[in-house]
Image 1 (tube, rainbow, N blue to C red):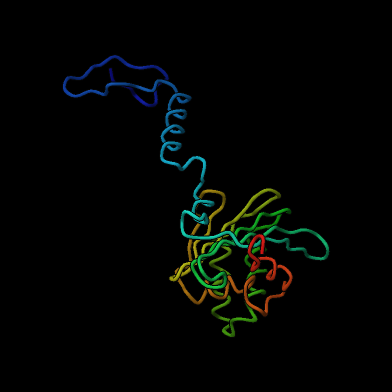
Image 2: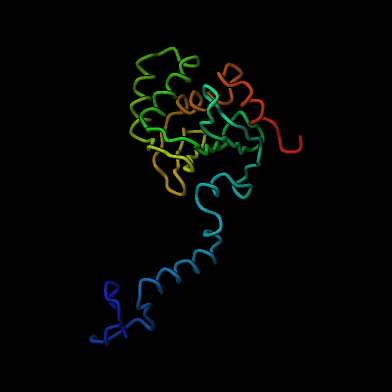
Length: 197
């Protein structure tokens, strides 16, 4: 028997030669089979965003803390890193607690990167790239930034939303949270504290 995946029911074999030995007739059956397959591969319980920042990827859990603006909770941040929590590779997850437009996230990022970058033209270019990448978020959404040697990758949930292959950009972007000159020194101190340390 062979099956047209767009058909809700199996179709009779109408061809000669090799044919599929089984058919998942309904979308529900196909989804269940896919879940079993992903579970067997160890991917279902560990989505890409958290997998990219898990100890299995060579990272260790560091600290976490809240970022507040004018007393309002904006996001909760968590840091995973290899040996040095201030150098790549590392991952920073932001769990948002407010609705914010992606363009506003990009603009705020540029403002926070300004102490680390003197070239305004370059900052403007990076700001446009971030505006293209960063989605609008609302309470409960999270973004994950991964700092690699060659740049930065960004995820929303389990989905890669883009990357910037520029080591200077990545250094300046993650300096927002990790540089001693950050505008949020309390959050930096919490991120750089090992759990139980």
